[in-house]
Length: 392
Ligand SMILES: *Cc1c(COP(=O)(O)O)cnc(C)c1O
Image (cartoon, rainbow, N blue to C red; front, side, top):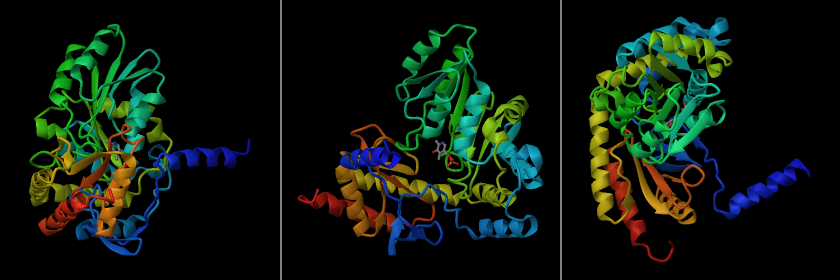
């Protein structure tokens, strides 16, 4: 059979299920007011939670560093791509998080694939929360180790699975800190207890919590007051609250040395441009200095939840900038997203296979750069759409 014929069939099937995805072309910087398909809109689907992607100081650092150090890094870290700016960022992140060492990766996806596979091999056992990010799940799928998932946040089930392991087996338990499509926070203290009891290793991906959670933005670790010993493998990303690009792993000296030797997604890829490391250093400073960004964000979240639940929409138990509105039916969810778009609000409909079938949702995200008025306007639009009877 011709490749294109096979693909046409698969694509038609996906369209029939109302699951076809489209790219919307935006122009200009990432910020609340954007131009999407030539229409001015307020953006409620970015992960730029602290509004740093377009921050003048971050831009300036990026410009200066690229003027001084060029754009491309030229090679992987182990050849000649490891720049002093990468090193500075790693040291600054280690100092900020309180971990011994940090290693930069080119993206969160690569960090997760690389770490899981550097730490496990045939005979080992990987256990993951069912709602973990695709990059963690994929890390488990490509691993030689045995890979199983446990029901979302179900510590009882996790413990049962851990009990069934043989004592000699290495066991890696992996969870999102903040679940990316639900916005809820993993029960990390309970996970710490379980892994301690069963002699397993805990890896937490704090892509959505880092910079946002905790009094000074240290993320999930600070939120729960946990130590590096309790969460020995911490992943953070720079493309979300940092407003830049890239990712890092924090851990012991031994962990980082092992990753440099064994993480294939670290070894066999071009290093992140040094100018991005410079921009991220500035973001890190702003995360610490501008705590108003976190408090403003929290105000927006509280207000939104209060008003929208009064309207009868179904919210999920999330107190993070990820505020999904559960719709259920994929087609209906897309329709509501279009209704919002017509009113000037950009909110993505998230459907299967990103989330389980029948749990399609509007994934609304907030940024510290949103004004209270913009959130009020979104709330009004949701009330208005709720009031429409026929079209939905
Ligand atoms: C976004 C995300 C990633 C991937 O990070 P990138 O740097 O975008 O590749 C990994 N894990 C989680 C939980 C995420 O939300």
